[in-house]
Amino acid sequence: MIIDNTFSKELLADPILENYRRQVLGTAFSYVEPVKPSHPQLVHVSSEMIENIGLSNEEVKNKEFLDWVSGNDIYPNTKPYAMNYGGHQFGNWAGQLGDGRAINLFEAYHKNKRWMLQLKGAGPTPYSRQGDGLAVLRSSIREYLCSEAMYHLGVPTTRALSLVLTGDQVKRDMMYDGHAAYEPGAIVCRVAPTFIRFGNFEIFAARQDVKNLKALADYTIKYFYPELGTPSKAVYLNFFKEVTNRTLEMIIHWQRVGFVHGVMNTDNMSILGLTIDYGPYGWLEGFDFGWTPNTTDAEHKRYRYGNQPNVGLWNLLQLANALYPLIEDSKALEDILNGYRDTYEKKFLEMMSSKIGISESLPTDKLLIQTLEDNLMLTETDMTIFFRNLSQFQKNHPEDGWAIIKEAFYEDVNNEETIKKWNHWFHDYATRLQKESKSDSDRAKQMNQINPKYVLRNYMAQLAIDDAETGNYSLLEELFNLLKQPYEEQPEKEKWFAKRPDWARHKIGCSMLSCSS
Image (cartoon, rainbow, N blue to C red):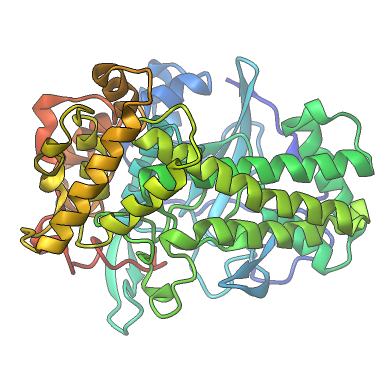
């Protein structure tokens, strides 16, 4: 494993080395050391990520590995640090935020790829505000499983290297209702090319610190967008356009698999268009544009499933405002933002068409998909099961459509009007498929590579958490392996291809989540 720390070498460091909460001005990061855990225990490790960063399986078995992924010791010749950034939270400027419970260890360079390794839950930093900088096993399992599951779904995401129990108890008010309790402490080692966020740029712009803003933009382009060339106003504009494109691509993938981030604040938006910060996220059970898993957002539902594309655009507007001092061309920035909306409509239609096996675009496809979405809302319909089973539809037998998809309904449907609407859609769908050149079997194969059979349903993660809190990690391992092949049939794992059980409908952790971790 080759260590190549570029961020901390090329950007300004906080000259104050004491670790206390404060406003950090004029610098990109602050040096800080993790808190030593009392009794660290390696719970799980991703062999795939071990290989990606250039470690061997033998090295993972050594105590030295456990020491640095737990924060018990610092990797030789490195200096951990926390990043300085701001952000808009639920639409309001929140000022300085920063890595309040994340500590960046070092950058590993292996096979022409750069990986930043970061500990989440390793103790306080100057950016922790009123927090303790720690994390609990509950939230750490959710992040560890989901980031790897998202990668194998084909969704741009940060990754996870390891999950460690600290041996310490951490006090958390899980639902912010005054009922705080102690939970097992844990640390996830997160991995990404960089953890730079929209908020890293926003904090400098808000403080009118153009020098550091430019330095950060130049650094980001140099290492992560080198194809854009030497920084200039035109290159900064192209940089913004590329970030816009990547952000849009990420959100299209979210909509495709039914993922709801839950807290799309600008400090949770990756400059690389990666899904980052797995907090109160959730997966659609019933198809519902208005659903959000985040109890903090329950009233206004700003970050609901159907609004994620709009929030992505709003967040990009904030990034455009932050980059404006480097570009000084409002019209050009506005054109890119306007292009996002038009491109989203086009990409969303293409994505939804692919989910129902249509690859040759026709003007009538938009209405067919809109009618499908309306039907999916007639009664609670499991998104994952519906689209996966739809691949069994045969264009010469629309009368079989109802039998194919009825397993996806959460209740028995006896309403004649509902059944009539579905049968009408199946007829229109079959007519449309007659205009496609693919056979039924070829279309099914294509659809099954787009519509996953297995996703990390909220209750599945909670079951793994419940077991892990008793010291049993077998379900964690089972789900980790299951979700490596989300598009494969895996008949021996069929029990996970099922609707949310009734007991999970209103259970905390399954349907209600908070930012508490």
